Amino acid sequence: MVDRRLIFDPGKNQVIQTESGERFYFSLDERGGDGAVWSARSDDADVDVSVYHTHPPTEASVSIRVHRGFDGPSTVYFVRKRPGTGKVVGKFAMSFFKRTGDVAVWE
Image (cartoon, rainbow, N blue to C red; front, top):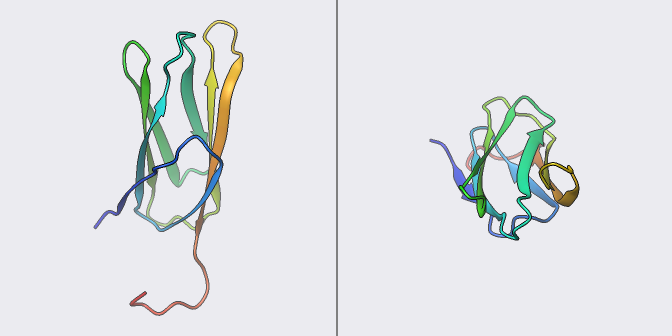
């Protein structure tokens, strides 16, 4: 079973507890008339991030997939830049970690 989670307050730095196989979904606003769009990168091969843009750019749909075997921690970095100039007009990071320690199997 794949767990799917929505992020209700994207655009802010966050730390999220996760498990292998989880997926996260949210949207980012790209309106503003300056053509700036969001991009993302993960610092861990066990965490994939994809960003899909509407045309014209008004919204970016984001999906983050945590692969099986993830042992964290990892961070996904988001940046919004204006085309041509490359000027950064927004940025935030989402850090993911896996709970460790003694936990009962039913928890």
